[in-house]
Image (cartoon, rainbow, N blue to C red; front, side, top):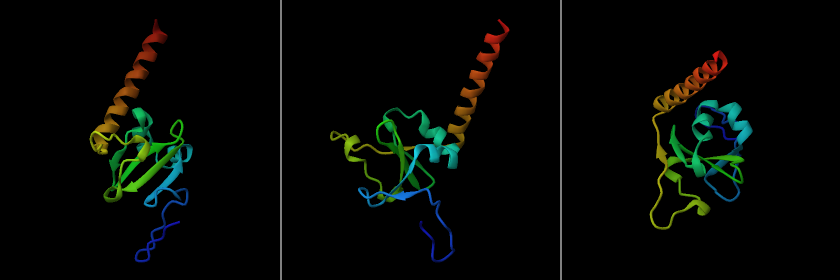
Length: 121
């Protein structure tokens, strides 16, 4: 667990240090969904586990089926080896959190409307 010597801030103990990516921490996907539901919604539908840059970190999923979520400080981020595109350097997708959350809410409300229309028929 990381503790700031100046202010005493304690990082979430569910983040574990990666033994292969020295600057990365990881957390199981199930734990991540309960601890960070807003960010989990953004990572949930990512095709091929596209990395996103948010709050000074880059978050991306790894493992078969995206079992782990990795976080790396934005300045330390490098594309993971197995996802690297050698023709060009891929950069993490920068997102506007408010805009993305609005999209998710609109999508969910549309699904509720469609479900309620199906029940009335």
